[in-house]
Length: 361
Length: 146
Image (tube, rainbow over all chains, first blue to last red; front, side):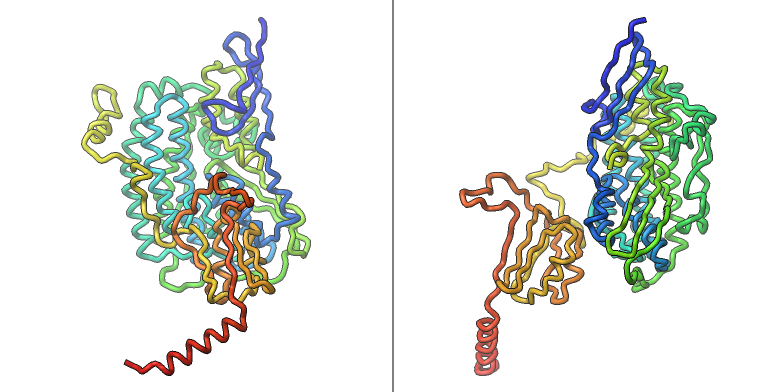
């Protein structure tokens, strides 16, 4: 049969970011998909040779506007492990509280975008209305809605008072109730089921073979979550990753919805367990320049992110690299797109939650 | 709650009929910013001693300070609002106001090539400033206490 090549992106209505796929079609069936990346490469990693390591955190934060908190946190964790800085307890708890709040923010954003992609614009607005509350919490506690700039090498810059933490938990509970109404729509609406159920199925064996990460892997039943390693105090709270077994687009939506609820529950536990009181130390300032190399892993909303930092004893790092979750999920995405209908391609691409600005940095 | 007509959005739609809109009419109604939100840098020319620490620490190189000319300048369009300069300022001459950054347009580029977002202060000459301070002090001594 005659083959046609249809370019998908860099400008496509379904995705604001410049993902580029060349889709090889036979009639309406996708036979092959060839990805191209590099449209928004900004060379952020190469900036280490002219930006001091203390200031590099602000650059790393700007890799992506959605997981900016976790990028800053991962960079600081890497530098702290090289410089053997002991981070005060309260600062460590505050970091993971902010991290979980940013996970809720990211998932709500994605659920909205997903709804928009399959044409449910009303639902998109409901998701983003809830996200706005999270951004308010961020503005109140960190000073910024998107770029938080609270992570420092050695701790955090701002404290959240105990009364404020209780207010945040109450607010998240209210948000959780509002979220249930939206979650029911995602779970029960016949048009959503029709678009998502049984589309783009990634089996557990395939997910392992192509090394899918994050909600993508967990929707296929792979019990994989960096938080399970117990770093960053996750060993002190009860945590079990959300798993679904269907592996289709709907399962990926359900995993993210359940993770929103789970994050609210985790924040409850964190606020209960963290050391209370005013004026507790938040920062241990590092001394001297870093020397050595390290790998740091974090579970971002989209999956596992890996930071590699190599320092040579000067104030400029020798090498900094971030392997972001979308980059790891591109092989899985290509595998799903092959063999599907052209009309399902936008849905499948969106359910991996692609962040191209993370991928290309 | 599942309803028999499989219309999961129906309760929400009915509630929306009787509730306030979720959005604001933006230019007429502006949400006040929270305390501690990072907005615009404010500079106090009277207390600055031109130590240049803020310029050295600024990750975006938005601040230029000259000790000789006693000038302090900031490019608001380059500033990333990270708050570092406010934290390092020993004289507390810098403050972060919660007011949102001003929107700059090309119309601000005048015939003299003014830079949008560029703000500059010139401090008084130290000798003159000292004389003024002395005069003010004498004045306050001479003034009858009430």
